[in-house]
Length: 135
Image 1: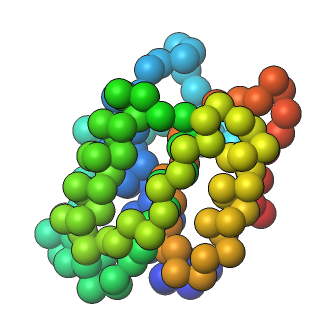
Image 2 (image 1 turned 60 degrees about the horizontal axis):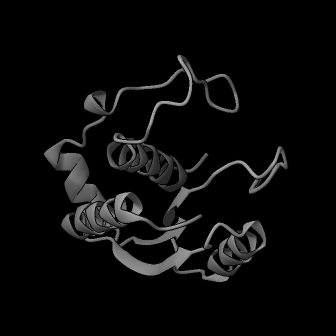
């Protein structure tokens, strides 16, 4: 795995943890798709050197939402603020309006944009359907 890919993965995980820290708890314990244990947002920090590395990459981001509300608008504002601090340009923000087909299209459209380095995606499960598995 290349260093750039690892860096993006680490950055995405760190930013996702920082930005989604206020998400409601759905279960007593959750794990990632490969059995990863959760990490508290308070344990995820970028050192000044890491922040400088992120800034130097001139990354771009897409924020893809399943819906918007006061809570998600605050999340988007916080994400844009954090991205700005890290010199990450937000090139797309979408609202799927609780429509799974629209969100699928939004994701597919965003994936076609070669400028996107990382994304923040907030989604709900669609009636047991598997979705958004970009492997």
